Image 1 (cartoon, rainbow, N blue to C red):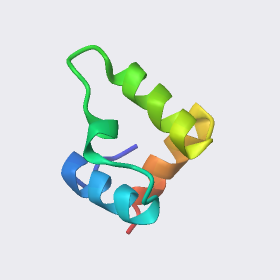
Image 2: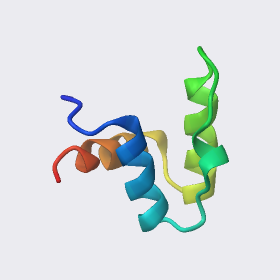
Image 3: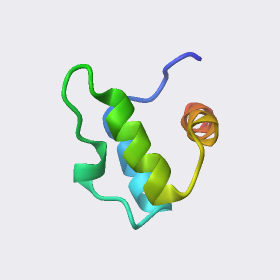
Image 4: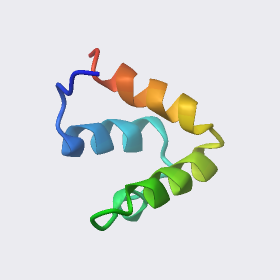
Length: 61
């Protein structure tokens, strides 16, 4: 997947699309990205595969 949008832009788009998300949901320390993805998965009731598709979709517009 080619990254077109910055992480900041992606967070803004996701927070607009899913008002249940807040800045803290996107915070992670080096090496703990999986923990953040697990949290997003639970909050949005999506599988990790669905999250990957969602992030890929964010790159298309």
